[in-house]
Amino acid sequence: MPRSMDFKQALPLQCGTILNEYTLAYETYGTLNANASNAVLVCHALNASHHVAGIYADQPHNIGWWDNMIGPGKPLDTDRFFVICINNLGGCHGSTGPLSINPQTEQPWGGHFPMITVEDWVDAQARLADAIGIQQFAAVMGGSLGAMQALAWSIRYPSRLRHSIVIACAPNLSAQNIAFNEVARQAIMTDPDFHDGDYQQHSSAPKRGLRVARMVGHITYLSDDEMAHKFGRQLKQGDPKYTFASEFEIESYLRHQGDKFADYFDANTYLRITKALDYFDPAHAHGDNLTQAMASVEAAVLVISFTTDWRFAPARSREIVRALIDNRSRVSYAEIDAPHGHDAFLLTDSRYHQLVSRYFARIESELKP
Image (cartoon, rainbow, N blue to C red; front, side, top):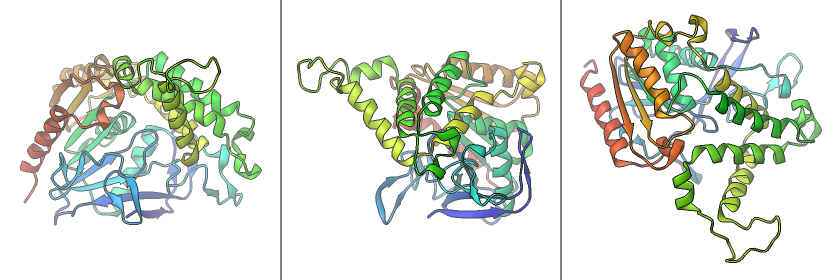
């Protein structure tokens, strides 16, 4: 079940703002062993939350977003490991974010909530780990934006994790990726119901913009082959009707995903998370030299990419691998031939899951008795 923890110690953010107090929502699975050596931190991607596995008794349809990966007998086996997942700061699932009350104004933060970075999330996660007595994680793991956090952990807190599992990642976003994010943000910010981010005070929400933003995102998560396989050019009613209604199956899919997302996700959170993606670039502070940026890494690193992921292409993962090799770090790399595109990291693929399972078996063999 979800838990939350309040923090009163001020948290300096990369943007220069200080959060004097904040709350983090999180969930745990499995049992922490006596010396806290079997803890694994799972970092979530863009629209996910701390509910990474299992089903709530009163919400039978609310399945954890990585339930096929995490649980008893699964690749990350919660009979052997203690797993924790934290809703990122700035989120909309229980952690302090734009929907929360700003204690200085007693009004929702709304559009005034500060910009958040991947490094800010990692710093907040480290404080929660301190609070529950975890000085070093057996592994930090994530896919996509979660993988950026796993990478940042290995750079920012090198002695606090023994393994970093980086899946479907890039060391920074390409110009094309930033462009997609900007189109999504503009769809939200130009919605008449946006009100400069203070839509709560107007009893409204920019749902039309958020729907379009989500539709843009979904186009980038699937490969062209997977989209053709799932939808092709299929018309829902067999023949064209010559209207702007949803006639093609792909149109129907995108509209459904947009509608569903706009009903549960916060637009201000979406804006900030996409900006955190854009800003992530550990090499920037080192003259754009990724090798120098990763010189501090002590953890063994597993990097996994997928052949049809054009958003975070395998070539970008290989940049990470090369930088680690240049530093003579311990690194393993796997490139999975999967047809699904970027979403492959969330799906059940026997080769992918066997690889992760074997890697965690290796981690288990290293656990302190």
